[in-house]
Image 1: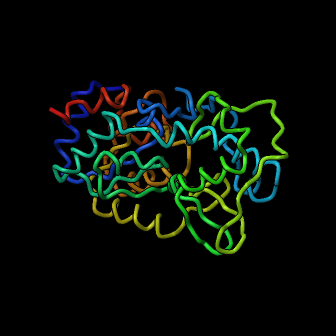
Image 2: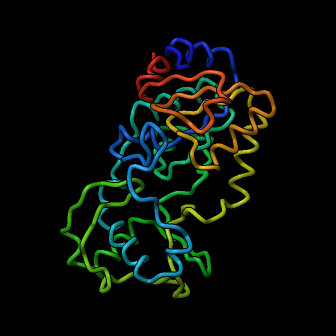
Length: 271
């Protein structure tokens, strides 16, 4: 059963310290597509796995070719009303921590300070061998310099800086090695099949420990990392509210559910 937005406003008023958990629905108004439909099913093929990226040269070339095109849009994305509303909520001292499954850093750009990037950040590229890191903008320039024929390509945007490039031959696509040790470079995000680094999990846990309720915004919770936080909250007896279009994996655990676009559902925070 879904509730009106006024009930969400009352929920936030009642709980002074919220652990806020956000997902892809927060960023769709910034032009970043989400992965799942209203039933929580994939809208497209699932993302590349860690094992495929590291173990298959063709898969890795295909990933970076699509990313070269997709980054042009993803890297220019700006915060929307949802990000600004949650930053305002933190300004008022109502947030114990904001834990996001997004990798776009738009919460920080909107002004949120106490943020855990649970799945990492796409604006950093890291070497899997020596852990050397470099900014994605600089890496983008290297990709384009090595692959000038790909620079003029355009394609439909896909989630998380990806782009739909179909029917192309990726065998000649060149990937820069780590400038420090020559190792394999990977975006500093958690792929499917990869473990979330323990410090990131601990930071999210600390936010939950300090909270008296959980607010889920724009996540279906189909990915276990987010669902686990809600499970832990429910086991502790903490109320959980969700603002999300469509069902979530944790519907039966929710104290309150509002089905509305994220920006519309949180507009009262800007008044």
